[in-house]
Image (cartoon, rainbow, N blue to C red; front, side, top):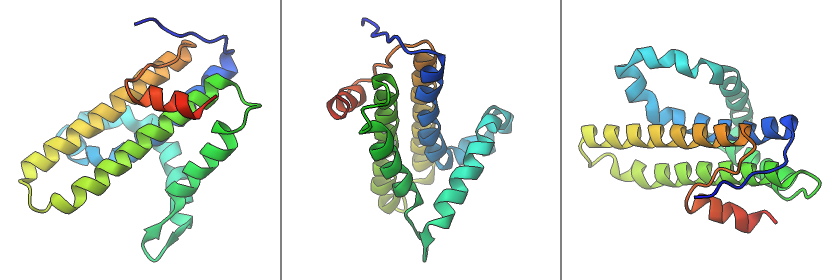
Length: 167
């Protein structure tokens, strides 16, 4: 695999890393069982605490009768204010779109698994949630490292979809 590099400066690299915090926050509920079993992993998530606080405020403010649209509003804001804004560098827009797609994949998985999780064995469901949590975190950390190095993170299927949306 050849690495696509960018000429992104330090500030662009930082801004390209930030959107990956959102899918990490969305993956946290899937990791509750793992973090309960291995509490020594919890300090590794402390850097996410300020972002989790702000994100929960935004999603909580826009919650109506148990139906939250805060996450959807964050998605719309990122999509229209960053991804579709051609005055922002391609590197930032690509990474933002890729993080949005990871978040969408997590949401779709949650929608599919929640109705059938009642009939599946709890150990199987917990194993599935742990795998999803670890997979999402590893993907995001990989993308953050690549972005910090000024490289485009090539994630099969997700990168291709992101390329189609960012021109």
